[in-house]
Length: 396
Length: 166
Image 1 (cartoon, rainbow over the protein chains, first blue to last red):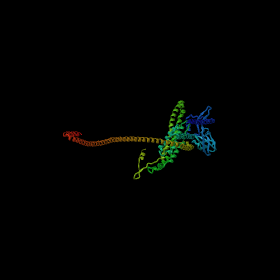
Image 2 (image 1 turned 120 degrees about the vertical axis):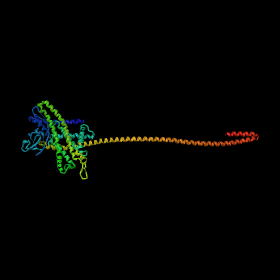
Image 3 (image 1 turned 45 degrees about the horizontal axis):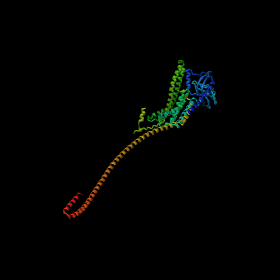
Image 4 (image 1 turned 90 degrees about the horizontal axis):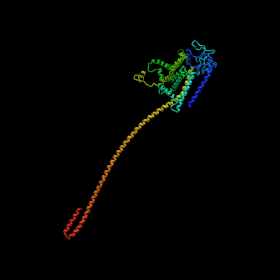
C-alpha cells in the first residue's frame, strides 16, 4: 500500500518534469533557426564532449530536427542567480535561448549578461557584444559571482534530497524494528561498511565516531553523483573541479582543526631527526599537509570522473567517426560493445573513487588525531632507547 | 593548468560548500546519528545476548557439576546409612541374643534354685513323714512287740526297706 503511494508520488513528479520539458521544447521551437547544430565531424564531437564536461545553466536532455527543419531542444531551464556590479540578478536560463556563444544579451537590473561557453559574463558599459583578445578571453566583460542553480547544483540538490530521504527513512525504521527491511536492508550494510572498513581502521576505535557523519555523507554523496553521471541525464558533478575542490577543502579544514599537539609537533619540529634538518622537514611537511594532500584528493576525483566521461563519450562517438569505414551497423556494434565494457568499468570506478576519497579523508583525519602514546625509554646518557615500535617503523 | 583554472567556477564552489555544509548537518541530525546509535545498540544487544548465552552455558555446566556432586554425595550418604543400619542390625541381634541368654541363664538358675528348694522341702517333708511313719510303725511295732518279738523285727526291716526307696 505504502509502495503504491510512493510510486504515485514518483509518477506525479515525473509527469510534472515531462510537462515542463514539453513547454520548454515549444519555447525552443519558437526560437527557430539556429543553423545546423548536428554533431557529425570529429572536431564537433570534441567540442560536444568538452561542452558536456562543463557545467551548464539549463537542463538539456536531447535535441532533434523536426519535419519543418527546425532544431528542437528538449530540456528545462534553470534559474540563473548572479552577483554582479548591480547586486543580485535572477532570471531563467531560457532567456539565453540555448546560446553559449555570447550572442544573446540578456538585459536585467541595468546589467547585460551573455553566456559564453557556459559562463556568464557581464558586459561593460556601452558594450553590446563580447570582444575577445587573441587568447579568446573576453576583454570588455567581467565575470560576476555565478550562484546559479546550474545543472551541477541541481544534481547536488537532487542527490542531497535523495540521501536525506533514503537515510532518514532508514533511521526511522530503527524506531520500530531493529533489522530494517526493504531498501533499508541494502543501505544498512553500506553504512556499516563505511564505519567498519573506512572510519574505524583509519581513525581509531576511540575517535572515529565524531568524523563518521562527515565520511558517510561524503562517501554516499560522491558515489551517488558518480553513478548519476553515468546515466544519460548528462550530469558531470564530480567531474567539476569546483565541487571536488570544495570536498577536499572540507577534509582539509576538518583535519587541520582536529589535529592534536603531536600532529603539529611532528610537522613543525620532527622528533628523532638532526636539528638542522628539522626546519627543512617542517616546510616539506607543511606544504604536504596544507596543499599536496587536499590537491591530490581533488585532482584524483576530478580527473578520474572527467576521464571516464571523455572515454565513454569518445567510444559512443565511434558510431559516427567510423560510420564510413565500418558501415553504420558495424560502427554501432563496435561502439556499443566498447561503451558497454567501459560503462561496467565506470560503475566500478564510481564506487572506487568514492571509496578512495573517503578512505584518504579518513586516513588524513586519523593521522591528525592519532595518539603517539608510545613513550620512549631513555638510557643513562639520556639517549632514546629504540623500542619495538621504532624497529617496526624502520622495516616499513 | 590554464584550462583547469578557467574551468574552476567560484560560484559553483560557493554553492557546493554551502549545500554540503547543510547536507552534512541534516544528514548527521536526521540520519547518521540515529542510524549509528541504533546500530551500536543492536550490536551491543547481540554481544550482550551472546555473553548471556555463554554465561548460561557456563552456569549450566556448573549446575551439572553440582548435580553430579550432589548425586555422588547422596550416594555416599546412602552407602553410609546402609552400612550403619547393617551394623545396628547386627548389634541389635547380638544384644538381643546376649540378653536372651542372660535371661535364660537367670531362669535356669532360678529353676535350679527352685528345684533345689523343692527338693529340700520334699526331703524334709519326706523325713517328717518318715519320722511320723516311723513313729506309727514304732507304735505298731511296739504294740506287736508286745505280742511277738520276731514279727516286730521283720516289720521294722520291711518298713526301713520301703523308706529307703524314697
